Image (cartoon, rainbow, N blue to C red; front, side, top):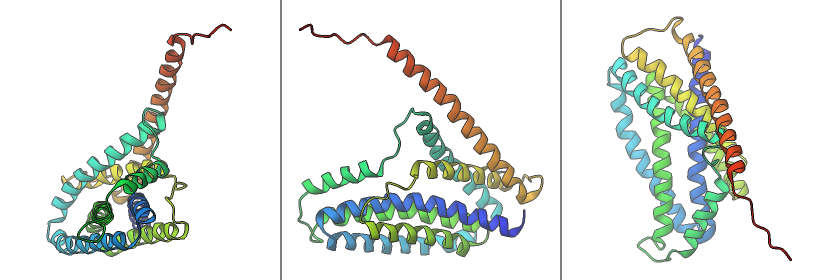
Length: 262
């Protein structure tokens, strides 16, 4: 695999993962801001970003002093945990066993909760401030984790940061323009892609960190991605057939609906 292809996969994985996290954070911020006003909401966003910057500034340099094999082993294991978790949910959603992620529904729930909360507090509106702060900080921490781990493993944190910044700017710009949740973003499909990429990178780096080597070096990553993708699609197809069979049996076994004779 050429360095250009490896760098492209790095940026793609970071970009797609950060789009998902940014959409979730934006949904929370928009729901609160539109419902309760923007002053306290934007203070919460600013406080979340400031806290996130401090955490990244503290953790970023620490990653550079960890031996690369140890870093790849630990990060590979963590990426497998995250990736398999995302992939499991995406497979269950694709097969019909789990409801699809609906940003419109989440937006409405957040908005209804915001409408019934009190408007008092230390920051003028503690509810708006706290919810915006938590949304930005928690989703931002996942973005920071992805950037730092991917970038440190490839010895190119700035390049990983480019993918993250592009994702955040894109989602934020669209969100500001339409002032609504990005419900048209195919988030369930994106999460499926992210699950495949994180799982594949986790396998690749975990083996290298444990002292193993891959045939073809970096080119093996393409094969791993294809293998994980094929297995995930096969799982979706098999589970979908199982879901359809169960649904058909449930309809057959359901008692007939009584009718009222006039």
